[in-house]
Length: 309
Image 1 (tube, rainbow, N blue to C red):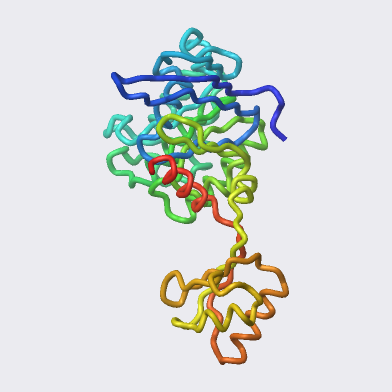
Image 2 (image 1 turned 180 degrees about the horizontal axis):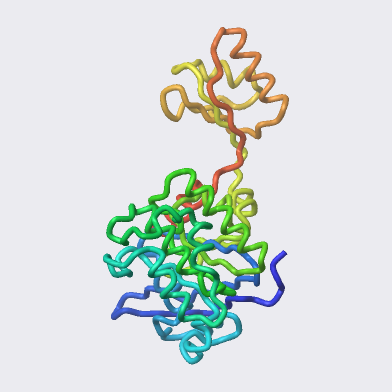
């Protein structure tokens, strides 16, 4: 379980670029050893927020602490305690993978072993390959290794699996879980909602620099539950007849798209049994069936659409 003492604390953070409010009164707290997801559409203020936490930008207003330090005033002391994932283009294209990892390791008093770390991210075969010749996914893995070589207490990972194949993505997920097990705080940004749902203890959804929702993925998806059941079958079913069989009002069943139906009622065992029996009696094959729990992606889209509506 994450510590009660926050590793990251943000209170009423603001950052303006001219008349644009990139971050608008944002507050959040991340516990020690927690994997925390900062989610939002492009332009939501995520990058600015993370850059302030890393000490690359100065806030216009608000209270910010990372590992108990002010990222601006205590930047030098904080630098050796955090790991930052570089984005594509941040490395000299002619430098070799192991060479740059050894170079970064020389900056720390207690660095991880570069050869070991290269193996952890699956790049040992590419040790002598230059950055320019690495694939996009391989550059992401190298960037992850560089963020971790200093044994950080807090790691900032920006789109950590972008461009990776499924095997590399699964390995990266395991690495993030191992960081959590070692007590490392991880703040990650990702557009992959499935990744956030799989890895994050909690997530914050932001847009226009403001916090829209924060909680565990289960809490956010549970809070969005509606009394609704979804199924797919043959198109153009007689929904009025089905509504009578299920004991719901005729306006509670809709064919939202050809062959896709919503029932305005909770997916109880009785409802599912009655639906299956009705379809069986008409020799109609049931395709998919889903209860009212929504995915994190559905919650994300609903909240951000409402905020922009």
